[in-house]
View 1 (tube, rainbow, N blue to C red):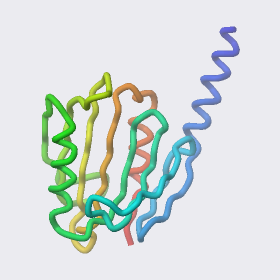
View 2: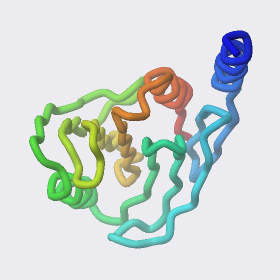
View 3: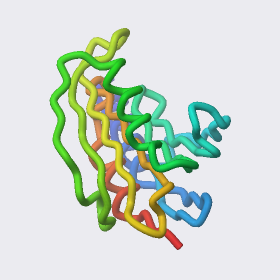
Length: 156
């Protein structure tokens, strides 16, 4: 039984190392092969968007917001849902300069802490918003998964 579990762990590590490419609205990145891509319907002021989902509650969302208040609107939506919120500003996300913030707290329905990062790159991409939600219950390999997306993300 121990050998079987060891084989399963090795297979999971190999799968995690594989990645796929995503091209969306002039943005390119690589993401873990075990994540899935979901197109978002226009709502809440978003003109369009795409979501990368880990399958265990962690997500990375790229959305196009038609007005300059999009970042503030997304922030309010997350803060309203969160409890025990700690906040810190962000002026850099991966290689990108811009503005944003990181929230840490809990959300009703989840037993663990979550970390939400909302970031808007500077001009000419100031209508693109990246939202990263980390569920602490989904921590195995998660930092490397988000790092892969962040390190490979380019905008043209």
